[in-house]
View 1 (cartoon, rainbow, N blue to C red):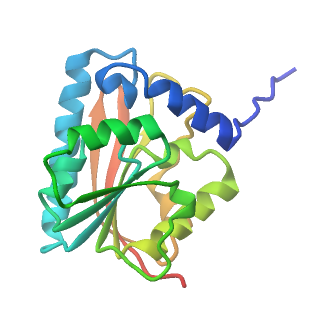
View 2: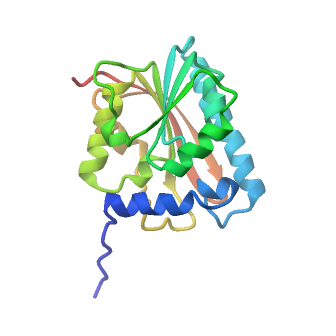
View 3: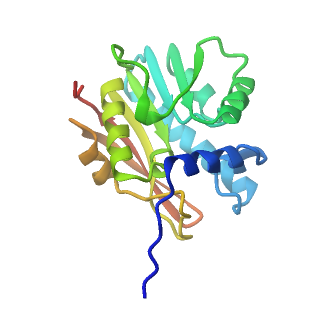
Length: 213
């Protein structure tokens, strides 16, 4: 008989990230099993791809970083936008991010989830979301998240796994860029790159968004 795997509830996902926040260094936000030099190199390549897309948008007045974690990408985003709002749901992650970005006066940190962004009358020039939506497991929750992103930003830089040589755990769900485009109201793919490391393949996509409200 085939075993049925239960999808973890959002509260269980939140508990998992509270545990991960107590790890050391990049293992808080990347595979704990991979070598530190691979994690650092992948982070550097990710930053180059993300900031390259930000540069292609011209002058960025406001950026929303979704799932900032420990703030490993935040300074690079802040270097390409006049103001950055960085969100995360995990208090310890936000504390680490504030420490890492204490020298930046243009970054504001907010505790919230992507599904429930608190801004009703504001649209950011761009949202940056790197390996975050894969952890939104429920179909209704990911639909809510994508609608919230489309309402909150004019463009989206999205980085997500498409294929993993080592199977992902129960707190991750892989989707293709086409699946995300179908979930994001009024989405148009402007550019796409690939990011391969350690047998895993991710896409890096620049997406234009229409306000669904």
